[in-house]
Amino acid sequence: MAYTVPPLAYPYDALEPYIDARTMEIHHDKHHQAYVDKANAALEGTSLADASVEDVLRDLSAVPQDKLAAVKNNAGGHYNHTLFWESMGPGKGGEPSGELADAINAAFGSFEDFKGKMKEAGVNQFGSGWSWLVKSGGEVAVVPSANQDNPISDGKVPLLGVDVWEHAYYLTYQNRRPDYIDAWWNVVDWDVVAARLAAA
Ligand code: MN3
Image 1 (cartoon, rainbow, N blue to C red):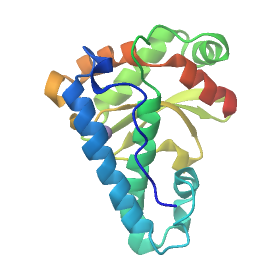
Image 2: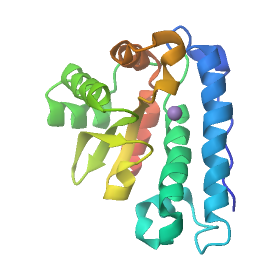
Image 3: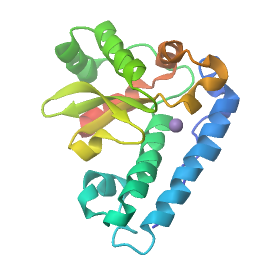
Image 4: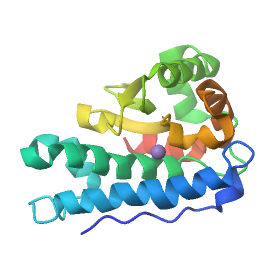
């Protein structure tokens, strides 16, 4: 079944002042739609046309070689952005609790140290990409990815990701990627992240 862009669960302006409405509108309606359209075009007629996006990305070796780049970039873009929209909301932010807080403290020492690692990975990602909190083995870790790559293709379970492509922040923050990441924490929905960890 062809992929579709899921509707946002909140209005475009719901994440202001941290993420502006125009950025949300273009990012969701134009960028994400383009990934979906190109992924569907690449997968059409292949044995993976009815596979879930998770299954496609978990085993990219099953993708025909002449489609691999298009699928990796665009199915990846679809998966990454779906996770991104779901991980944010108005009136969120704060700190995780319970099992997620325990896992973060065990891996990084403290929530502040974790935020520093995630920011560092995002700021240092050269060009376009993402910074991720993942479950890998029995613990959580921070990893960067280039372009629309996702750690799911490396056997990890993505729990939270911040989009550090310029299209995610340029209208408000221009070249100030670190400021965008600092602001982004205010919209992270930790309940969603905790549910992902519980399901992992
Ligand atoms: Mn993006």
